[in-house]
Image (cartoon, rainbow, N blue to C red; front, top):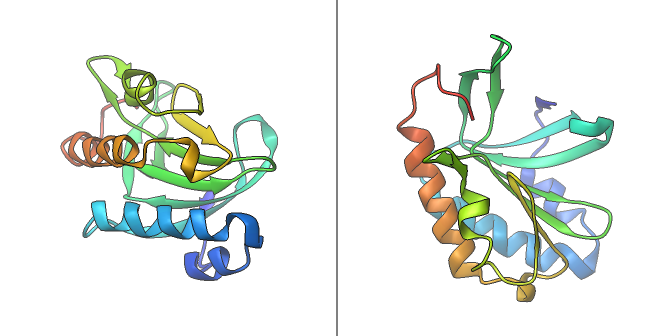
Length: 148
């Protein structure tokens, strides 16, 4: 995946009516909790080979386990076929934040670095935003040689 020049607002406006309000509200909330961090579209092949469009918040450059330098976002927001996904790319005490918060988030599928749900009303938005804030704190304090 790579950053593109696509306007995130244009992406949001083009979403189906049944999810646009939830995605727009999440976008506004994440932006508010990530002051000064870039907000850009990431597009292309995601892990597993599927084409994705993700609004990325924050900008992190790190060296992965293979030794390659990688650019990525702190937090990502995407619409999948059947659900909304929020990607939280932070680790604290060797545990992904999503795993630390999974019992508090609500009705969602929680992966190592993702939270997926059908509607915003299915999750505790305050808990999600707590996670976003903690992600910003963790990621902005890391050096470029840290793994995520």
